[in-house]
Amino acid sequence: MRLIHVGNVVIDLVLTVGDLPVRGGDVIASSTATAAGGGFNVMAAAARQGLPTLYAGAHGTGPFGDQARAALAQAGIEWLHPARADRDTGFVITLVDPTGERTFVTSPGAEATLTSADLPEPKQGDLVYLSGYGLLHDSNRAALVPWLSKLPVDVLVFFDPGPLVADIPEPALDAVLARADWWSSNTTEATALTELADPADAARSLIERTTRADVLVRTGPAGCVLAVRGQGVARIDGFAVRAVDLNGAGDAHAGAFLAGIAEGKDPAEAARRANAAAALAVTRRGPATAPTRDELESYLRVH
Image (cartoon, rainbow, N blue to C red):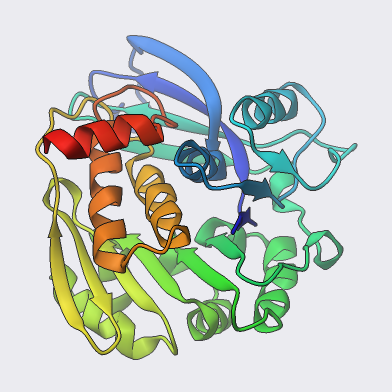
């Protein structure tokens, strides 16, 4: 099996701050770093667990595009398309506060120019990762929604709506919910769509709203809620760690979960492994800090 990612690889400009600035104000960052982020984090997490991974999104010409491709190559991730000649890859300004929470401002680039001609024909058994960010860009949305409806039924579609789920046009979201095999989000995102604060209630509502999807709702240090059709809702415990940077935790969770599913693990075991991967990721600074397979196996043997 392989993972085909049709989301967006961007460059994260990560600034660690003592507090967020007030409107019109300014703060001094204690540290600054740049790294490939966005969709790269999920792909890196999956690849580190041994899942072959292909980036099918767009990427640009310029320093950010060069940095994105260098990161993909270093992670052993192939990309499908040549660089767009007319623009660079986009970037995200990420502010990380003392609690590890992160706040984003996104500037789109070449990754927002996907067309129907760019999209591949998945093979039997492939896994497709779709991000809600892709559905916010007009070109990407116009390409992805019809493409999803034509995918073979044996191609598993994993959808993560992202924090801007409320901004996704309703027809596009409905089309994704009709085709997705997995919905994965944090509690805030699930609540934004269902208006239910309890993650278990939100998971049940999402099961009812989708056509065929099973549901993961991440609950931070507590782990996640897993809702599988016909099996009810289960809480999968998390792992207690000292978090220093929450950036990329959900991506580490998604990549490890998909790798587990690709190996044939049952959803509860895949979710447990994903919880552990996310726990390890938040103990490290940076957006793409998911563990390797050996690191994850070692951690799980002890815990």
